[in-house]
Length: 144
Image (cartoon, rainbow, N blue to C red; front, side, top):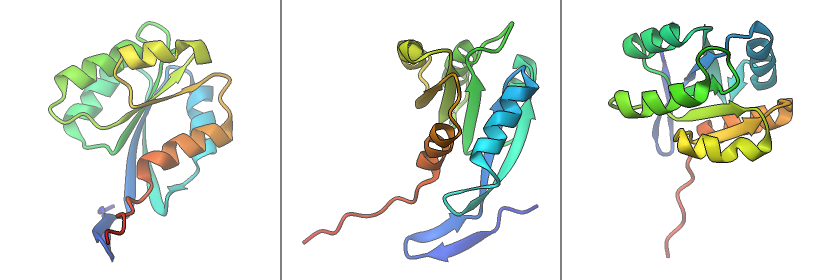
């Protein structure tokens, strides 16, 4: 499906939100997809799901994404280290939403250079709001 854009008052707005979701736990991936739904801020969400570190590296090497959602609690290769790696290795790393084990782990999200974090247990409203924030239209301030 092509990323068709529509004209707004500020230029072209992509109609797709391309999101990569990484977790080794299928239930976590389902929970996040259910919370976010099929659209965010008026854009259709195009999901790419991965369950391994290698799959994330492969997908980010061959596709462009608007947002990466990484599970910091994934076994073997957690999203925190993966986030830091991507921020240092990708020429233009997309924003990253990190899923962390508890609110006190926010400092680890900062260390990993994540753009935002949501803690477990995942509240669907909090996950949706965090994702929507990345795609909210930028409103130009009025200047007198």
